[in-house]
Length: 342
Image 1 (cartoon, one colour):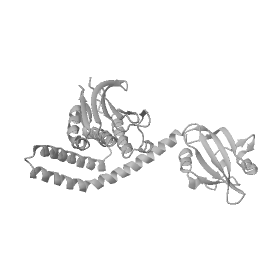
Image 2 (cartoon, one colour):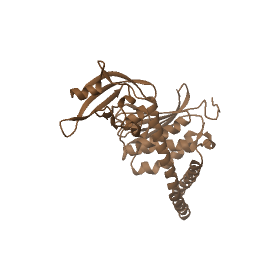
Image 3 (cartoon, one colour):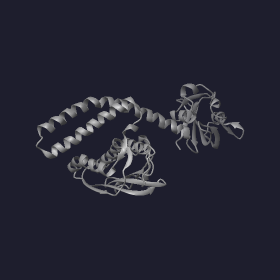
Image 4 (cartoon, one colour):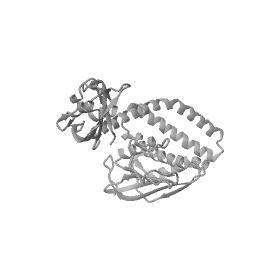
């Protein structure tokens, strides 16, 4: 658990307060600066003596074990270190108090997550507005190329895909800016057919980077889901995989039925032979918790949120130097609209 620190003067009044303490206690710096620390915490005692005053008096560090106090959720225990902090002269102007809680405050972590989600929502709305004009320009260029080179069958095939995707993206942006729900998009989707479409969509990317693609599509039933949402989730992970390999390597996509989450599920596995992960397995969380890999955290976070919305689960497994595998697990026996598939 991360250390939390603040400073107190000789009058036992708080002089500095960290943002982490605000999230842990619910007390903002503007409200606590100048207050006695005992207005926020129970008095820190050492053998029935007030420990902060004793640290000032003795000019030494005092350590307290398993001190009990209140956080946002309920009572917590923390080890406490009280250390004299000297100013430019020999006198001691303040002491630093460092708390090492035995476990994090669950409510505080929820507030952190909520704040980041709010920030992501604001960024997403700004981006949605910002891409509309470039999309119109791209769509016009695609239509021109298709009409100008109508005799080039591969080019026409790609421009048809591009125009269709641009139209869907335009529609998605309009709905995003006007509502927070997308249930109207939910329909019965053939995931293998969707992946076949994605295969054509990413083929130029993989070709230019000399990446070999392998597709092993098993026998799976259709499920009720937004094809747009699922396509974006899959593309986010594929783009991560391509970026991880940069040049050369193999991208493998598999679909099959499995039993997980206490119900039959469709598994979509996307595996690369890139740089892999520092740890054997990782759970998906907010972007700030990801290892520092450019562009990877946000795309995986969005994919995870999409899969969770449809009652599914996303897992990441990998080994440094041996690639990464991301698996989507989507239940087939139950869905958000109550339709059942056996």
